[in-house]
Length: 582
Image (cartoon, rainbow, N blue to C red; front, side):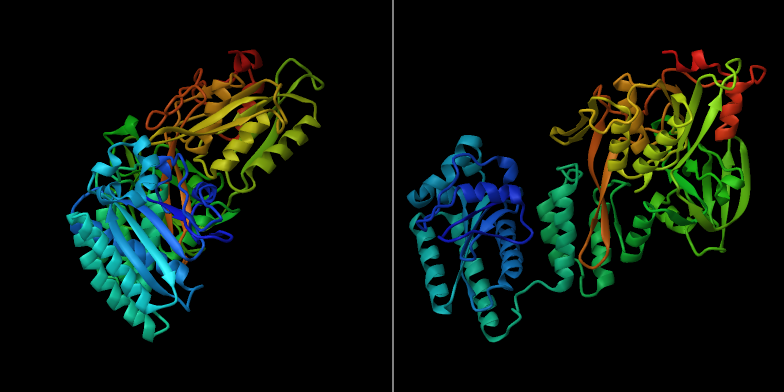
């Protein structure tokens, strides 16, 4: 953990890649008289790469949980090399002149730094007692000679207090950094700089460090992993670097957090747009409700897509893709195999109940138009009687909320006075679209709680300013193919008593992923949070339980659904009063 505090007069400049929140803390603590002023209270959660610098002095408070002196030294060295490289491009005329890695124990004995540690001591008295904490100081000045003198002074200071931790750290780093700086004096590109491949790996590491929900990182020392990887993993080529990143991600043991090479990252992004070339399947892992199953489960089949036309249904199991078993296959590997050039063929082995089928599907462009709507008439009310507006929402892509608004406006123009929102087989999509669609139906209330390892982090709610249809009777249809953003929407409408949920328990995907693009066009999909419904229900691997089931059999297409409302003799008949009653 680290926080950076600026020292020196003049206007503070934000260091690239550093958080603005930490910057505000640092700016409040800066004085114009050239002396460092430490804020009275520094929240411990800010001890990461946040802060400001004026390009002269940078201070970092760091922590290496291993407490081993060799790892503390290496931590200091890595941080210095990263930050100097980050800022050095705009300071080519300067050299790294003062690099000191001092333990918190040593600083606590030094009157010069008492003020700095006082605020930390109030927040966490263990701070200055743990050997794993250190302070790193980096200063830029014009001359190499001054660099040597300042390092010697830092070493003498450590010797004066007879503290072995900073002394050993400094002896190691003095020699290394002198060599590094001498190299920098004779070449424009410092010989000590991290390689381009190292920087890409560190970019991925920092992304996970900042965003990943589990701050224990699956029970491992995340800082030690970084140090070991930089020392031991080959990163001479881009492929070797990708392999190192994939290996790092695999240690998290999270199937939804994964590394994506540039082409795969581009393909993932295309899935939130309007068309996709493939067979039209959304797939997932068997949930806690289906622990005995093996293979991958079909969450939904896009209406009119190749798989849908072949009769593939939600809940079917995909046992093999092109003769490769899916028993140990990841869902993103499977998704890549299902996609391909338009007109090409993919072979699937699919099991529905006890029946196993071998299917040969031709890939095609699958329309991702997210909304279909129509008017449903009910019997005995006449042509001019009350009508029901049926809206089928198939995905949460970039057009979803706008398309729902348009559908509501069109249906209202035809005297509709009640709505049915069909989320069956909607496997989710963009989280913000789920929130926006909830606002359409709610006049006020919490939509979703976003939680991380410390509890509730964010609350998404609405004051009704975006409401379009907040008063008409509303029924939401759900099934086991209703997942992710669909469950956020369904949970918000149910817990706020805005809608009646009818159908089957939903899929149960309660984790949220964000996608981060890396500098070379590759990317990371990272589990950043979990969510709870407005009633603080964690639905992960459980799903949302509807208020009541639908009659069996009940069609999934819009025309079939409306026919079940019109024909009392039908086996699926459901009258209006029964449908909308709570």
